[in-house]
Image 1 (cartoon, one colour):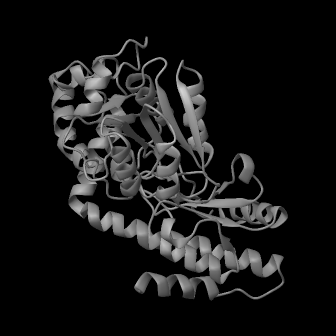
Image 2 (tube, one colour):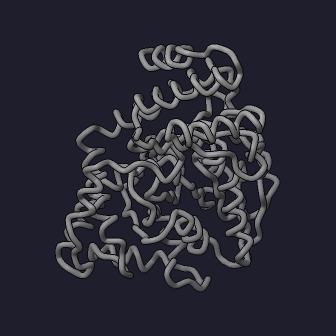
Image 3 (tube, rainbow, N blue to C red):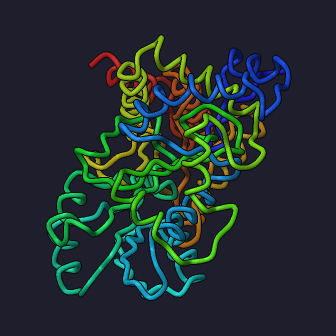
Length: 380
């Protein structure tokens, strides 16, 4: 039986050494062993998220980190802007609609990146905006927004306006620098580029965000970020953590240190370039322009019938799992994840399978075309 290959934009494959680390045995979460574990993790975690400040770890999904950012950084009645360019920007909007906030939505065509100049005009037309929420990578479309330019727009509007970024599907696959990009709060989850199972989320806040969170009257309990930062002073957590996942996180961070984060970021970029070149050689159209193409997930277009055949045959005949489109893009795109514990040879495998599937379905010979294009992109 051929080995299964998971190429979804989360959850993603887990390195065997990380699985082994998680299986070493449970330790008490109120023990000195756990305190030492948390102390060891923080410096490397800060580096990966591009911050000098502490990073809180929640035992919950990535969505919990999105909600944590919102309920700790927006007071009742305050005006906020949410950039919606796909399903996960829409999730930010849905979270905001649950609370007594004054929400302004900046809609972006799905598959397009935010135009900083147009967004600046939009923002300048609004009064007293206290926070702007955006994705870094919109997972549902595979677009990466120009964070640095957006951060400058937010801070030029008002230096006290917070810029809050969802990095769930890209932290670990791309370099972050929160200070340089004007990011006050960056959140992510474990099950994507960070090569862990689902179950832990991360919230990084600078001093401005921490101050706002500490002086806040919106009721919250488990998602009160102040509890997490206070516990971090003792290298602990306020509630029972997912101990085995945090043990695995220590190994993940060791991998980044040993292999070099820059080389891992470069591997992600190369997989993106290989995949896009190979897919174009198969006459697929990319959803996202090259300039804003994500290093962690790629989306391509075709008609609904062909996409269904491709997805089903990859799964059933080649044991390769990829993802479909979401909401308005359902039946219009397929998405291939290339994040975390994935490598160039995995891109070769999926492209070779696509050559076979399309040669049969379209009755046209594609053998070797995608592979040649991908190899050329890799070596260039």
